[in-house]
Length: 188
View 1 (spheres, rainbow, N blue to C red):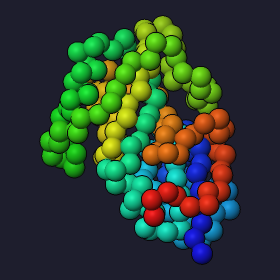
View 2 (cartoon, rainbow, N blue to C red):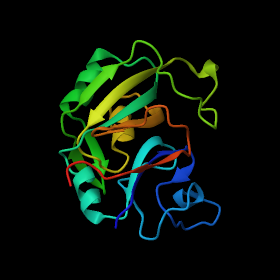
View 3 (cartoon, helix red, strand yellow):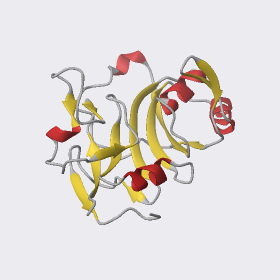
View 4 (tube, one colour):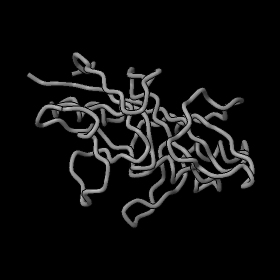
């Protein structure tokens, strides 16, 4: 029997169960997951939002495939331009394992209003640093720190990143640290 979960990974936690430093916060501190539970994909320590976990490797492979879209809300430094949005949409060159990599085309839009999200546990920066704006980014690949690298490549560094959707699974109104059991992930 396999177990499947969706969680709202809080800011400051690693997407793993063991870490190099005892002081690092890990997923196992949020819930008594059964042995063999693994995160499907990752969110870096500074990112937050929806993370799926399973004890079944088949589910992991399917969720990480390009067939599944991942959607993020991204707060960026500055007021992004339409030119920069088009560059991200069409794919930008980023560094990946010391190699140049061009990202796949994706969906990107500037949000007219900030999203209704809880404040982050650690303040991002003071308002005196200038304007910020929010964009929605939907990708079907998932390279290491990809969304952060994409926004930086067009001159608008990411300040906050929240994954809100993986395929049909939504973060919804889950609070940071919340864990929900899922019967099974679709498609497997």
